[in-house]
Image (cartoon, rainbow, N blue to C red; front, side, top):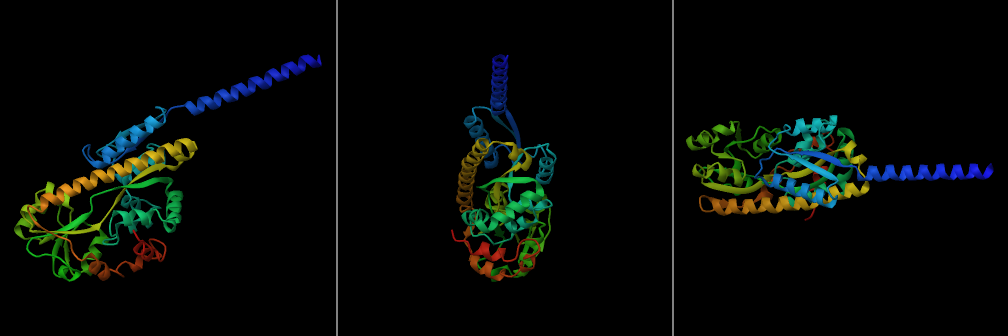
Length: 335
């Protein structure tokens, strides 16, 4: 009798073990589908990088993780897509780090849109990936329930064009009537430099520049080329005064459910895809600058003089929008 009970017990234990192992293997092999949205068109480096991300994730997971890419704002703008991530309707977004400041809990990231703060792409990315920025990212992730997978992917920075006067130093902004984006930080910076910011719809910009309603505007080289603004502007100043970095966001609940192995697959793919985005963007920028040099006088201004003029313009944000002392830490980052 005892022998029979022992045999039955061993059989039950074996069955339980095999069942548990089978369930674990089933869970491990279960397919994961992640929707990824972005706002760019299908020819844009962001979309091409998103496709690269999809290719790498699906290859390295042997097809177990599928990435569905939705370009052109099909799922809405940045705020709408972030809201969908928070409600579980969307898993991923590939978009600017500037936009993280647009939602509750992401306010400290307004520092990523401060004019003239970042010297170049490498400076900006190094600052955002630094040890002093990690607590800010962690707190924002906890408040928003959105995880920053990777901050990687250069975007075209904004420059400055003028109709009949070059801008070489901070002093040259005085009295310059300039069409700007309706951004409080941009308006504050331009006023501090002595310029006269004017709000004009983008659709009316070409005619406003042609007729002298405004003297200048602050879109980047690719826009100046594609919208033929060089026809009504003489000088292009390579200020690169507002930068952004495309960022892979993932819903925190989704991220936490992934295995460490799958998390690594996503991160590794985002690193390669972000670098690819940077390569494509910088190629486009070089082509734009080469073209504009045949149509305009391209100037590299003394951006350090402009930064000096704006040194304390955003000090009141310290300790309110972001932790006190963060501006200085960002400025001191060495490439």
